[in-house]
Length: 105
Image (cartoon, rainbow, N blue to C red; front, top):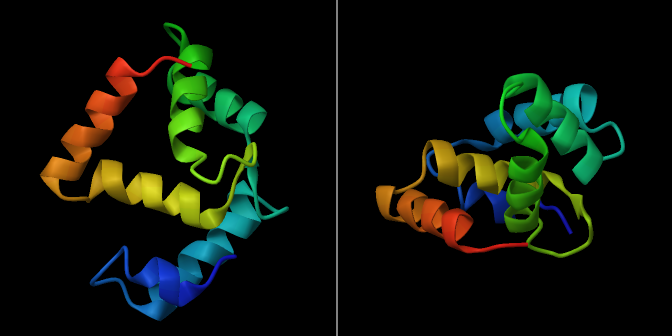
């Protein structure tokens, strides 16, 4: 279950109002149902990466992001993946990249 406090621990020094803003934006612009499907991620990746095999890339990313293995990405999974890949410790980003490169679906 999503709690701001659980996610805040992943994003220091992000404050609660900022995280609440991100969550509101997630619900309004990305996931009105509160979750992201694999199909949505494929569509999004295809728009951002029109050349190459964006579907395979989206599937690999979805597989790694879906830590709860529910077939849907909740806010915590989504924002955690974004944090690791964009602002996490370099060791975590390297580990994430290696896992994506070496694991097959």
